[in-house]
Length: 145
Image (cartoon, rainbow, N blue to C red; front, side):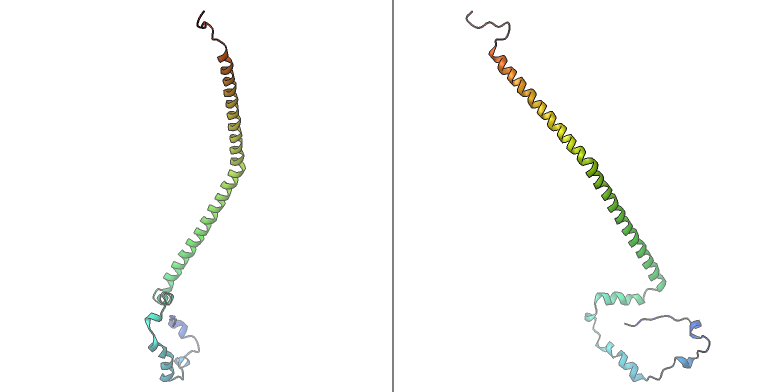
């Protein structure tokens, strides 16, 4: 791939440089041998990555640097957000384990104790009904008297 770079005239015409300094001794046959690979070019052999990289020459350097700066800023913001979310998740989960778990266990124990008290009350009332069922209620006379 050929990289095209713009060189301002001020840099070309520095002290001591002349047009003859940039001349080469190569002939046209050497140049044609360099570009002979273009004759064998087929678009099917070119990958998507190669095509995207070739677009780099179309976009001006200022635009590329601005896009890159925005990408880096977005990437760093996203990384910071993910780290912050992870920290918040850590704090919430550890707080829930240290405070919520003992509280849940205490509530469960209290519920179990209340349930046991209800069962004991039901048992004692059931026993009283059994004992009370053997005796005659007051004011009721047995039949035949």
